[in-house]
Image (cartoon, rainbow, N blue to C red; front, side, top):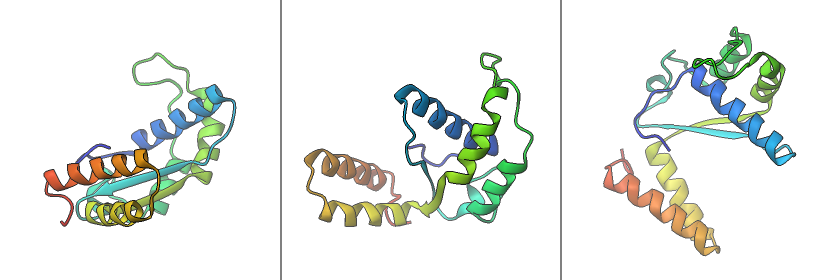
Length: 135
């Protein structure tokens, strides 16, 4: 979880590529979910100032994908089709920190696995410590 940071189409593409590579390593395909969280709204999250997550997905579908990674260490061309497929199947969501905090509180009340409860409590404490739980 990155707090109070901006994102971009390039970063979105990196998350999708990371998911593709993880699926290949595990030799199975998993559901792909990506949740972006910001203080006030989606407009402050993307450098490109998208008004909806669908608009961000459409922009990635139509963008010219790089053929090589920025540091030059990876040939991205073989992954272009997989990245575009991942864009179409990703469950891309957005919420505010306050919404996320409230969701975690609700899920904690329903959870019965001690490790999951501790994880959610830790995230909630971090949001509280940063005064982000009720913004």
